[in-house]
Length: 146
Image (cartoon, rainbow, N blue to C red; front, side, top):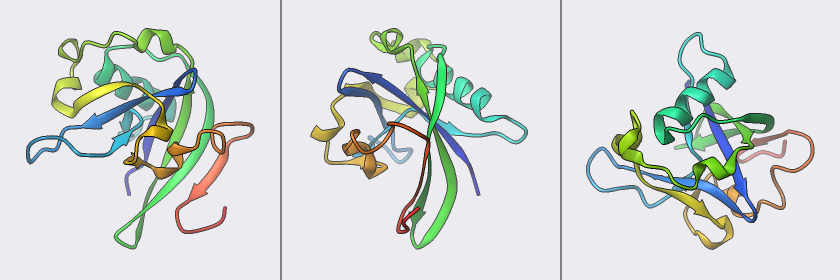
């Protein structure tokens, strides 16, 4: 079971989202927050910093833990994802994926978007930021009331 970390980079009513490349060709239709897997022996914030630098070339200023979320895929629960606030949004306005170690390989498109205008978000709760990422950290488990 793989655990993951995600960056929540907010700029006004928008958040930084990525659309990943599909290894089979083209790109996936869905949008997600930047981030990725935690390597063995790595702590959460070190993993987030590594993933964000690999994907964007920008060093994140990591803030609070906002949400812990667990996906349900094909009837099975996957490892949890830890969503952290990243507070240096202005640094992500001019990302050059060609200057990153993993960006061009992994990411088809990146930018700030109003999540309420996108129909294919992963996880889906990103569509309504007024219900998440405010107040105390939340535990969200798909298919269950937490």
